[in-house]
Image 1 (cartoon, helix red, strand yellow):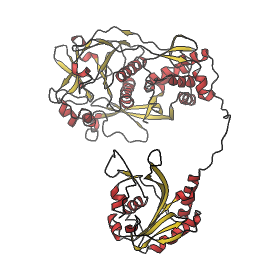
Image 2 (cartoon, one colour):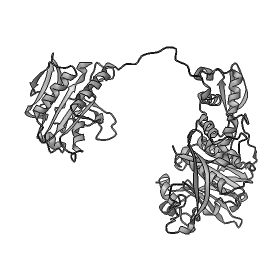
Image 3 (cartoon, rainbow, N blue to C red):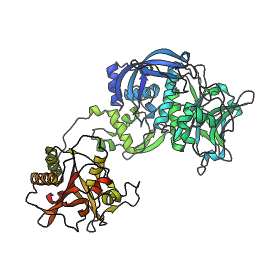
Image 4 (spheres, rainbow, N blue to C red):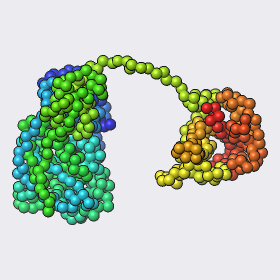
Length: 615
């Protein structure tokens, strides 16, 4: 998970309970945050686009702006140091994007610490502006389908810290909920740079349909040029690959001329960028799913309102061409019928119905009545993780405190022991490693070429064929471990000789007596390569290993001509070991044709033992 730095001062100023550094770490961990500790970060600002970059004290200053691509080696005057910041570093809790910034995290902390219980309500002013949407962008059957939600935030006060938090929040939401912009993207604009009363257009544009100045640049470019030349365009061009038209958000200036706000989902316009002087913001979220777009909008809007307590939210009218207009955003809470006995049953904590209701309120939820042991929980609109009542059980457990749960022993105990199959596998491993062999693991999926043609084995059609293989190299389940060992030797021809390797694993053969039509068989195979390796070496090894694992007493017989492995070995240098009518092992020195097929230049002897006779 990515690691974020939450400014300590911004977090502390938003909670009443003063926590020392150690207590802060403890409380955040109790909320489920994976805290790494505190750090002092150095800040650098890009003079081209204003993007703030943070590095640890041991890192070298950035050489390229990660936002606009400005090269600070060529233009060292475009980077300036902006002091330091004390942060608490923790991994992103991907299921809680409402805690990605200090304001949202403080909102959760206030409830957990008991400073404020119940839902935080955000009053939104009525819509005064309209976004006109081209029909294709809201038709689910259209290849350009990309729904939009918008909002306005007025009377914000921005400084370096708040701008940095806003940009990092946007970036983290792109990663966690937008899947690196693949599913959704966010835009934030300075409302004073255009005349919203004249309308905002969400439309489609051809790759060379217009020109605008992308963020961080000074020259105009067409959308096609942005995708080919701008760092963000190059990074995200794949999202628009194959499209004949691209989503575009635009507005009107005071003089009536058009101004591009963003080429979606790639880059915003330089003309509408947010600065410290910005007081009113316009926000848009577009994506591939209505619910996701709404959740992201609710998350970023409420986080900005928390970040700037003096600010006010305002709705926007979304007007699809030829469709029904609607108001955005929608902060109506999600209602979930919750069984108040569920936390006690699932977690084992001793809580009453009243306790459960209070704990839910501590986590920011509202309550709307209920009966017969249930309560209607009103989940805040910015919570993206409540998909099932069990998710509310987790919230109750967090509010109760996992550290407050008294550990207890389970009422019944069972003693674990090694299964017969595992015991055999471990005995075999000890036997081969005792002979100075190295264990390897190869793929269980193979193909007829490796399993039969290269091995000069007769194909008895007993192998399990895949109906829908992902590649030509993985069309069946292996019937022998030896080809995998030979492949391993073939990619290690530059290593010193002799080489000794083995593998314990399973093969599969067709078996009509089994419910699934096939059965797994446990095998072990070993291979030795070297300039002086011959049949005598592998015979001595095989007899020694069989004796060690409890299979002594078998007779070593010459390989019958009808055996499927007959042509795999040099004539007269292949054998089978049998006892009681069962075949325990096949062994021998590989035929030169097999060696050539696998690209091996030295003699190789192999053995494969059927371990099923031990189980």
